[in-house]
Length: 432
Image 1 (spheres, rainbow, N blue to C red):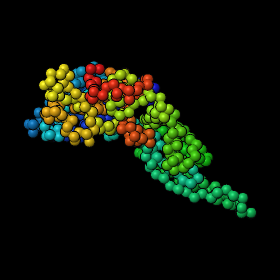
Image 2 (tube, one colour):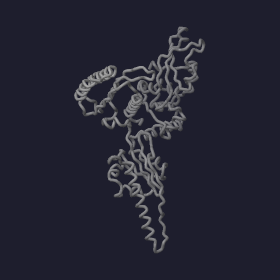
Image 3 (cartoon, rainbow, N blue to C red):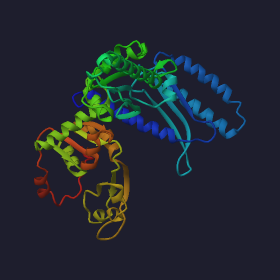
Image 4 (cartoon, rainbow, N blue to C red):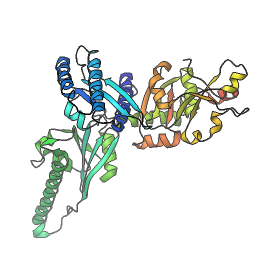
């Protein structure tokens, strides 16, 4: 994950588009004046322009004057946007345009166009905003079977059942063969049940709904299942790997995900575990090439020491730039200060007022710290990795380290820096 800078940049782009889509989902407009246009890669701009011209003619007949003007305005905006493109970009083009009503009840015109990070299939993109590929897992052993999926960072157990199979034994005398046949029959029925359940879960509308399958187990059941005539050929074609595991059930599922890491190396769940694992290794070996917490991470960024900046996707710290009126009256040159506050700290209004005069500082800018990182991380020569708390390591990183940290290029002594710069309570990164 961290070894390929382009992949990291791509992850940041994905995060930005996800954030955009979340805000678009929440947006509501008056009437029908919001246009969503999705053009697949091989389509022609000229065809879309003609379609919009036809729509313009149709929209002229809308009875409501306000709605008619809004729709015509939105169509005109989309037409203007399309003029910026000679041809459809390689991954297609998405345009959102219209007048939305903000939380304060004010109307705001929105005009957004972007090229998705993956080539798009119109119908699929419209019906589902899932960006990652889904993989199916079947964990099967002598005590039961578990069916699950791994999508992006999220693993989900779809179904599980237990089974009580007779063990091999030498008893029975003349009936030993009959016992063996009964045992084989029960085993055969068990494999059939697993194969049938797999079809119910992983095949919908006659199509396999996962990108790949991993069969895992502790005995030879997985091999038997993969070679069995009862196992649906459509699923058989999707099997990526057979994995030997020590346990069954959910523990086996976790182990199967780890052992099939190479095959699923593009899935962010694995990349995240590797990255945060590397971060924890730096800490456990006490190399000094790590930082955590907002203050230390920003100091390291300022020095250009951060190689990989790791931030939790739902980090709630805000970045404020204030104009300090107290400093202004003293004739100080630097009359701005930057604050990094959590929602809990925001409640304390003393951060926003002058300690001596009690005068309130003027707020120049406020934005989520993660968004600021996404816009500025390249200026500091760092790679930005946005992680979740869905993996065990991710959860530990968020709870134990506040969801922000970095792997450094060289050792940095933060304690020594604290003694030198105790007067400099706030640091400003805007000059970089």
